[in-house]
Image 1 (cartoon, rainbow, N blue to C red):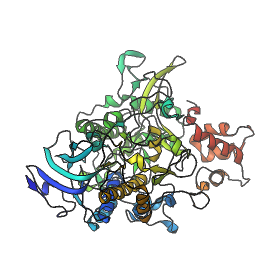
Image 2: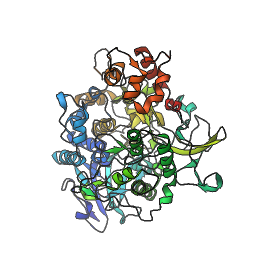
Image 3: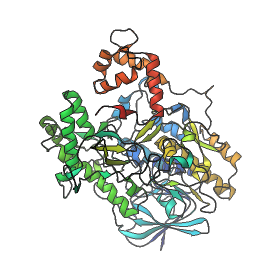
Image 4: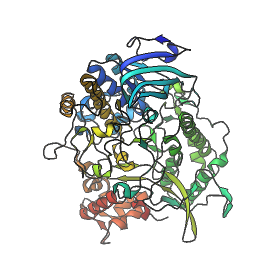
Length: 638
């Protein structure tokens, strides 16, 4: 057995170190996954004077921030951030903020290249001399009682298109012995291998008294036939739809929200890489998409609006230069209904689901470029699209990280729930402030019957409170949510798959929060090493002092702290700027329909006194209604 000294190499693929045989590494702290959270955890450990090694399954660093998601996209309140995260949000990817305010304006985000973000993270690791061992994924943990002594990893290089592989190249290729372990992966795989209890899926509404928990009513419904032979259920279901299981609203189930790539396309031949159909492509797999397209083309007469609806299917919704899932469409650029197979799957299952997302996107592009039900002009437009080589040159334009929104969630000493998001709780051990709405993408695409008619709809999506959250006030993530129950493991910290309900996590699951929690976890690891105690047993007063010294923002005082200005969002001021063409400080139906063609149906709902004008009071009342009713779009006529 070979013994490698810590700190010899930084960011070197394992293939450059050893091809065969078992390698042993020792460090004070082992961090699993070079996600932004894991990177900040490692830096905090090194800053405290301890040795650390990061083990990363892929060949890259930066997680989803290095794969297309922009650092400031899910940070509505920069003043609620702290520590190293606050500095990085300003500098990652070299943004040039207009007016000097962080995050004000999408032009800087749209210009940001994920490759630059990866390079910035790599530079940070190099600056702190943090060693990263690539291409190894967790295989098992060896424990003595409640203490992890060694983590064993398999050599499993990602494939040429940036996907994990089902079978490793070498099993048990790496052994890492450490005093503290930090699982900063999106999957919580090391946590699970350590025997720490966790949950997946959705809790029932009754479990934590969360009004919108569990199964939800279907949305984005369309009157399309889901059967192979229309009108004949006995012929079987088409692909990408399932029969509703009949569970009542609020019931628990194993499903979880959709994942997707955040990817870049171009029609410029200079930078375009071919987006080819997957092996075994069969257009029949997308027949339900074809029927939805036919439904849209028949119902949507305005060509601009039809183009927008087709774009929502493929390539999706353009966020800040990259494509994201369009949640207002019955179909979009990612499969729905398979995330739960990844969430608690083993490495082989996760690899299959990841590749299925890639193959779905490739197949959908082929279908939208060729099916006769797609208008000819749009088929030609899609056929001209390929992947943009510039953000991901090493993987033929494919992002190296799937946007995995939620998987396992530890069952820890404190569970973050929707009550925390609504500022209804008191926490005395904060490590981070979080602020975002309860944001879930669809969990299932189901068919059902209503009033003698067959429908297909999405189930599980909601966005309660918008990006600023239901109260526009940050809430704390407690240290207890990052630590297991003492009897299960006493030297593990979990800054990503921390203890939360499905709804609590749906708000807290943003990269800036993970980054802050990662740094706080690294500081906690340093305290546990210095105090020679368990992660649960560190002195909380000393820990808080260390967090504050690192610049972490732990408390929000509405009387003193300045948060985001609500006027910039769904406010009457914003609406008037968008719609009020005659300057009378009201919005008439004609003005609304001219500015918001696709939302014409919404005017009579907002105009509650039916006088043909929307007042500030009516618009504010509607926005309040939206925050409490995630299914508000069900009022859209079919």
